[in-house]
Length: 159
Image (cartoon, rainbow, N blue to C red; front, top):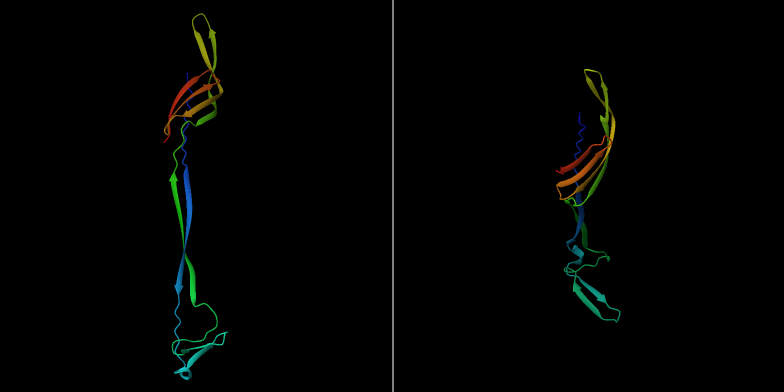
């Protein structure tokens, strides 16, 4: 009798990836140096306050400029980190499979004569159902039943 043998291999590769984005703000101060024009050498800058008081400073050390920032703030660096780790397959997972194929059926035909007995095995479509349970991250057990009245027990190794 020929036996229908089904070998099922399953490989599950699961990865858990996390992406982090780090942004670093870089602050840079730009120093703008300008030469003192010839007509301002030895001159003074006088500031009259709202209450009427005056203050004077040398033009060689200070200058009068529009109110604009002289600091340049740059947001330049942005680090994208992706870290992937393999997650372990959780134990006690179940698997149910439906089977189908062509093989020996459970019917034998016999014919007898006075000197011989002939036995004929019929072949045809065979179906089945299988159940497996993952016991550890590598070992599974199960059972299988087929329509040709075949029952099987399974021990599987996941890799």
